Length: 311
Image 1 (cartoon, rainbow, N blue to C red):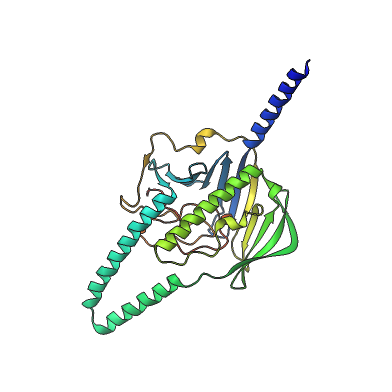
Image 2: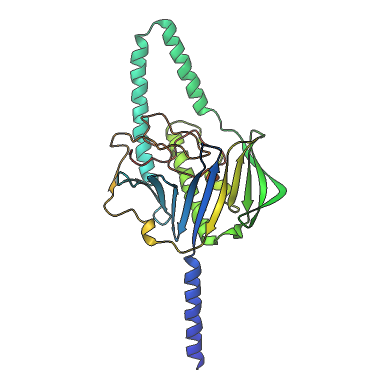
């Protein structure tokens, strides 16, 4: 065998190895306990530059495409989906603000016809609500400890998350080598996108954005368990699989139609996932999309992304 042929063979083998490693898949299953009478599970699947996330048994799931920076919220029952991009978020928020301003004008007209004592009471409540919305978020910090545990065969280090120096939950984070590096980067990218949408929504509505987002827990590794303090509900990784996943599961299903929440009637929000704040009141066009408890260090009081159309 001549050296030229040998070199070519080695390069081909190396290329195949690199290709295989760059397309590793990861499937994470989190089990939430203490939030409902029965345990529930959230599955996160990472395939190349896409991440799929949803609660087991639900008709709704989210699909994030990192290349196009697009989040799809898909409802398999109605066969519809919402497409969320930074530009679309800004467009929707502009319409939400317009609706809010119209609501305020209508309230002023109604208040003008109220008896003085009733009007003053309503004005005071509105003032308090506005102050709460603009109040600074609690200072969030994570105190790392020396305590270590093993979950699903992986060692993790315990840290305590504090809000205004008050412990709110413990989180056990494994090292960055607990999963494929490229898949880990996609996981963080998806949560950063969702955090950005939440911040944009808050800014548009005059609400103080959350101090910390979902991505912060996973930047230095993988959050294997989150335990609310002192003895609240928890979310824990119950399985991690590296088997190959199907391409079709990471595409918007054929025949599904797009749903625009700012143009159509506001859809009903799905139940809030474990660890996340409840969806906004009926009429909001941007309730949160499904997200695992493991991704939320401190539930923001602002909407994140639109829910899929109502069942």
